[in-house]
Image 1 (cartoon, one colour):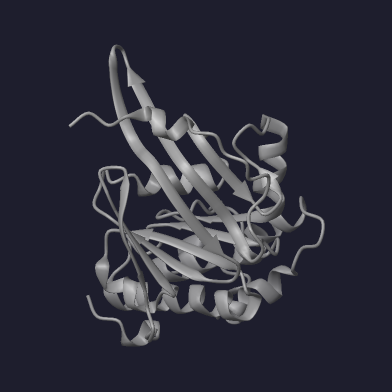
Image 2 (image 1 turned 90 degrees about the vertical axis):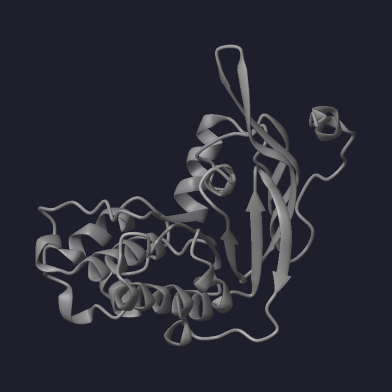
Length: 252
């Protein structure tokens, strides 16, 4: 069956996300071209992400979840379709506008921590606070993720889970409206991964930051407000969790 890209081009009148919606995604398509071959990473995806919610996006490698996250975060642009962040249309935004959006509105957390080895935890977080308008003090951000006693430790003196929590502190120190997490526990063992998820849950609850976690680990889904399942570039299912469990209760 050949997918019809024309449905992604139908007339569309939204000029901002609806009230209470952080992101409004409509008919989002991403095509990568390799010579004469077209690869569809996303196929006409529709999705709303609500202010302050915790969303887990599940799917195997190649399902399109990282591509979706990168477009939401302004790291990539769609081929067709629309992405709104509140009153901003990110679809046709210029590079300078996307740079401001990433700097002021979005915190990123990746599988690998990307800390600077020669800087302490406090100094790694301070790098971000120097470039934003209303930063959180590094000590406050690190306390929020349970690292008040590791302020002056270097990455080599910390465990993998502690380094990931420094990365979370660095992301939240600029007080982002959205936290986008790409396999944040992928490089961690079971117990350490749960500590990182507890830090993310605490940030979501206390700062009301819209939090999106992409993962292939279905065990994480139970802690989310909603679970979005993707396969072959499409959303196949969205589940609302009527009863969320704490990270400490997760099993995988």
